[in-house]
Amino acid sequence: MNIVDKEYKNFIKEIKNRIKTSQIKASIKVNEELLKLYWEVAKMIVAKQKKSSWGDNLIEQISKDLKKEFPDMKGFSVRNLKYMRQWFLFWLDDIENGQQLVAQSIDNIFTIPWGHNIVIITKCKDKDEAMFYVRKTVENSYSRAVLVHMIESDLYKREGSLLNNFEKTLPKSDSDLALSILKDPYCFDFLSIREKHDEKELEDALVKHIRDFLLELGNGFAFVGQQYKLDIGGDEFFIDLLFYHIKLKCYVVVELKTVKFKPDFTGQLNFYVSAIDGEVKGKDDNSTIGILICKSKNDTVVEYALNGVNSPIGVSEYQLIKQLPNELKSALPTVEEIEQELKGVEL
Image (tube, rainbow, N blue to C red; front, top):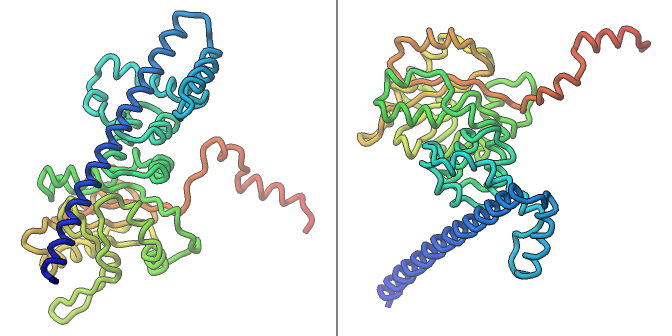
């Protein structure tokens, strides 16, 4: 009877999985059809506004008539119709002309949820940046909140920008993938620690907020351990943070430095990467990668330091808080201006 019960449980589990897969496919199809409808509605509105003198009042009237005709359908508010129009016009040139950039990923625009599309067209500066986030949403199944965070933390500019020696130390395919995954700088704006923090405090804070840290690292990272112990010929060494990357199929050593980059940091990280390759890496694993995350760096010094290093290593900076927008920076007084003001204040 136990065997029958076990067989039945596996059988019913398989059926449930099939149903869930079908539901997911159905919801994706419904989303695609809805967005294609939005596209056609927007296209008709834009065309009519060009040929007639109805102007903006047209959208208000359309909203009123559609909600009256289809009371059970959501999405025909004035605000949403204006978003449809904005969305259509944002992508219009590329899609209508079949330009290569969008032609490669046009289906993705209709695959991601409508709310994600609105976020992308309202927060991105141009089509290249927008398509980057469309692809990332499809690849990583971003929620809307995560998508907003990625855009606001400027993932588009940070991803693939860290200084590294991957081209010399990794196969071409692995080098390209590693570079596309890693960032510079890393934004740790989810942390609240002292301004003059040390490496241990930063490390502990990241582990405490490991979920946010993994989100910032990116899709595919699995946490292995903190202060990971290596016993080499009786000598003990401890790695700050050790990860495994699913897509790269390799271990990733992360060393944290709360000071400006120094050339000797690469020697220590090179040793750790070699040690993981020799002591931990399995026969099916690819070469271990090292990431050095510093408070700041001189790019030229980093390039010289990485020259001749045999292990694949990337060097990045980290930020604890988001930088103020330029318009706010200009509105704030400088230190000199504050000091000048204080000179005339009696304490």
